[in-house]
Image 1 (cartoon, rainbow, N blue to C red):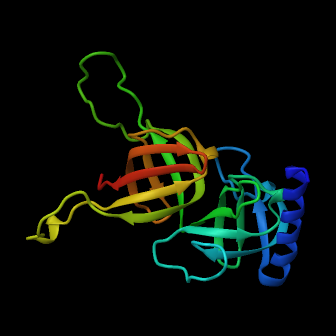
Image 2: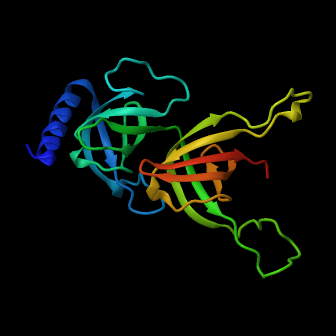
Image 3: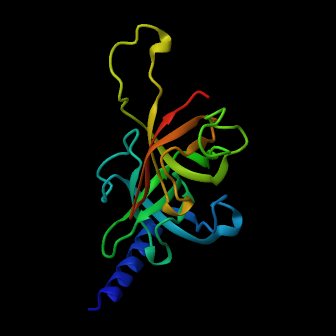
Length: 213
């Protein structure tokens, strides 16, 4: 049998299974760098079910584990699409043929800006970021933000000795072209700076650290 036809039949069967195991989800396809969940980006309502970590519903969802396997008819979706329903907001990270669909559960909504370059070449009177001069890259993107192990070690002798938190961020590739030094803001008002940015077939994986100013 033709692999494409076989995959189509498989997806149709998964869609039928999702009608019995899952619930309705609204599917959104981002059309620009801002507000991917805008009503104009909704293109489908489908039934979906999700299992934490591995397919088969054999393990419960563990704290800080954003990866879920999606059970739905993936013939209508593509990597980067969002699904919003019973368990929250997820985005499709990868859907290889004849394989489970990998989804990421979002827990924060993020925006990214890029600080402006110095006004003139050579030595400048001030070398820091100028408030209001940063360029907005994208806004309103649901993403996974999970605390990462801190690079610093040693006892905290005073309350102010606590190191700045670090986080691992997963989000769709379509949001923007990100790089080290970009500034991230979440829906809780926390500001972070991107210390490493990796783009792969499953989207962006960022390492960020919180800043206080």
